[in-house]
Image 1 (cartoon, one colour):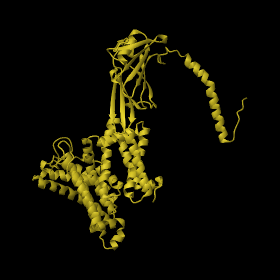
Image 2 (spheres, one colour):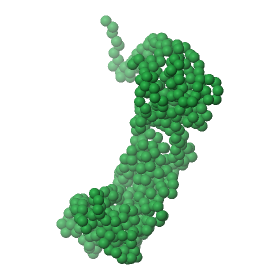
Image 3 (cartoon, one colour):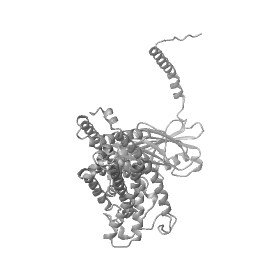
Image 4 (spheres, helix red, strand yellow):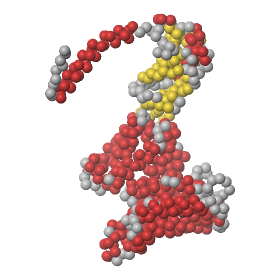
Length: 564
C-alpha cells in the first residue's frame, strides 16, 4: 500500500502539492505531443462530422489585410470559399484580380490574397470612430455572403483574426461572445444562416489620456497640501473617484474605460449640437438644484422638487393657453403663475413643519403623490386635454413661448433665467439680512429664535422660494421645449436636483457648474450607449458614487490621507 508523506506545516504541504502538479505535467507532456502530432492536417472535420474551413486574416494598423483560407480541395468547395471569403469576381490565379491557390497535404488547398484595403474583401466592412481618447476600429465580418444550402449545411467556418492591437470585444448579431484577450482571436460559425461578427479594437491617444492623469494628480496634490480650496477640490476628488469606479465596472463588462470616457466627451462636446444639448439638459437641473440648495440652507430637506416642478409646468401650460395677450406681458405672467403655484404648494410642507412638527421629508414625499394624482386628474379634463390619446394639455400660444437661441434647437432664454436665478439666490443668502436669518435657522434654529429670528416664518418662506425655483424649471420646460404639459416628460428632474445641490454643498453658484456636470453625463451617456453599447445606467452609477463620497467627505479624506 502506497503511503504519502504528511506535513504538519501548511507551507510544506503547499510545496509538496506544487511539486506533484509539476511532475504530473511533465509526465503527461510527451503523450500530449504525440496526440497532437498524430492528428492529421486533413482533420478539417469537427466532432459533428462537418467540414471546417479555416479563414485566417491579418489586419495591419493602416487597414490592409492578408487573408488565407484552408479548405478541402474539391472544386465546388474551393469555388465557394473564393466567392464567400475573397470576392465574387475573383478566380484562382496569380493576377491582380486573382486568388493564389496552393495545394498542401491531405487534399487541402490554401487560398491567399493581399488586400490594400480590407474592405475590398467580400464580407468585410471597417468602421472607424474617434472618441478623443481613442481611435476605435470595428471590423464587420458578414457570414455567409453567398447562399449555397448544400455546402453551408455541411461546413463550419473557423475565423482567425490577427489584429494590430488587443481585441476589446467580439459580438455576433450584437450579442457579446466569450471574452478573448490579446490581438489574436478565434471563432467558429456554422454557415447555415446569415449573421454578422463584429470585432472591436482601438488605438489609445497618448496625450489626452496623459492629460487626464496629470489633471487628477494635480487635484490630489492640491488637496493633499491645502485646505483653502476644499470646497472645490473635494467635489473634484469625488468625481475622480467616481470615474475610477466606473472604469472598474466598464472593465468588468468587457469594454474599454478610455473609449467610454471618450464617447461621453464626444457626445457632450463633439459638435455644436452636442454642446447645445448639454446646456439644454443642464437648465432644469439648475432650477431644481437651487430649490434643494435654498431649502438646505434653512435646514430643510426638500424632496418634493419633482412635484413642485410639475405643478409649475401645469400652471404654465394652463396660463400659456387660456390667456391671450402680447408676448411682453404673456411670458412674465406665465412665469409668475408657475412660480406662485409651485411656491404655495411647497409652502404647505413648511407650514406642516412649523405647525405640527411634521418632518419635511415625510410631507414632501407625500405631497409628491398628491401632486401626481391631482395633475393626472386635471390633465384629463376636457378644458385642458388636447384631442388625442395622450394625457397632455393643449399647446400654449406662441406669445407664451420662450425664444430659442438658435433656429433649429430648443435651447432657450430659460438658461439665462436659470443663471440669473442662481446669482439672485446667492445675493439673497449671503448679502441680505433675510438670507442671514435663513442660514442662522439652518445652522441652529434654537439659537436663531433666541436672537429674535422668527423660525416659523423663515421655514415657510424658505419652502416657498424653494418650490418657486422648482416651478420656474417646469415653466422653462413648457415654454421653451415641450409647449405643453405631459407628466411623463418631467420625470427625474426633481430628484436629480438633490444630487446637483449635494455635490457643491448647497452653494448657489456651484449649482450652475454641478448642473453642467450632470448635463454632461446625461448627454454624453446617451451618446456612449448608442455608439459603443455601454448601458446608459453607467451614468447613474457615476452619479451615485459622486454623491456617496460627497455626503461622506471624511471617507475621501481618510482614503487619500488628506488634512482634516
